[in-house]
Image (cartoon, rainbow, N blue to C red; front, side):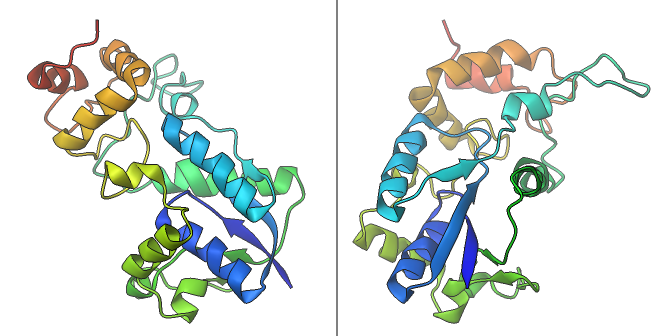
Amino acid sequence: MSYILCWSGGKDSTATAILAKELGIKIKAILCATPDPFREELEFKNQFEDFMGMKVITTDVTYEQLFFRIKQRGKYKGTIYGWPMTIYKSCANHLKWIPMNKTMKEINLCGDILLGISSDEAKKRPIKKGYRSLLIEQNMSQQDAYDLCEQYGLLNPMYAYFNRLGCVRCPKQSINALSKVAELEPDKWRWMWNVDILSPVSFKPDKTFRAIAMKLGLVPQ
C-alpha cells in the first residue's frame, strides 16, 4: 500500500517522511501547502526533495490571494478581507486543507494520508479513517521528531529563529518573532507596511502593523 504524505516542512511531517523511508512504507506523492514561506524554507524544500527522491506537489494558493483579494459579492463587495483575524482558528483550514483537497481533486490523486501528528498531540488531534500517523505508532513525541530530523540533517532552518513555524506574515507571532521577520524577509516586511492601511482588520486585536513596526523602529525605507 502506498500513501500520500502531507508535508509542511516542520519537524513532525519531516520526521514522518524519514520514518516512512526507514520502515519501507511507500510514498506515492508528497503534498504541501506553503502559502507564505521564508526564502530559506524554499531551499530546504529542495534538500527534502533530494532526500525523498521525488518532487513535492505544492498548492497554488498564496497569502495575498487569500486575505487581500477583493470581495466579489455581498454587502462589502469591492473591499478586501485584510489580515486574518487572530481570534479564529481557521487559517489551517483555508491555507492548507482546502487548497490541498482542491489540488488532489485537480490531479486525480487519492489514497490514504500520512500525517505528522506526534504522540503528545494524539489526544488533541485524533486520527480519522483514511489517515495514519507513524509518529503515534512509534510513540514519538515532538522532541523525538526534532531529534530525528537533526540526525538526518533535515531540520527546517527556521527552527534556528523560531520555536514554532508558520507563515512569514502571521499576526499570531510574538513581537520578538516579528523583529526577526523584518530581518529575514525585508521585501515582505515592506509589503506588510504598504498594505496595512488597506486592511479593514487590524494586524493584532489592539495594534496595527504600522504601530508595531514603528515601536520596533523597523519602518521600511
